[in-house]
Image (cartoon, rainbow, N blue to C red):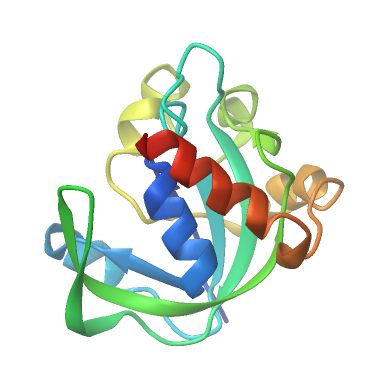
Length: 168
């Protein structure tokens, strides 16, 4: 049986790296949570409201879906994006992404997802990624996400361009 996880990305440059490199990286502080991630696990990519530097316009959305192609391992070389260093990572096969600034808005779903037992404090759970998802959670998310996602090649350039714009 495979697991399923929600990974949280709060920076456009980090998102561009994940999509462009088809890898996920985690800080050392997340080792305990990341150790459970295995080859074949489902990975849902969530972009936080501030990912594109405009939290009043943007919503927190699940924008993509991937499969882990490796277990989470120590990286040979740490990855630094912005001011953060990541020492753990796994390979990803990105199965699809939604067009830029679209995706499944998470806030309206939290009341029916097992990953958020207390909907009143759901955003606090996002500070401890990767967040484990139940089979029921996966079904709820996929029901909506599958209507929006397309091959990564259709939208990668838009995400890479947005990352450059967010830095300047």
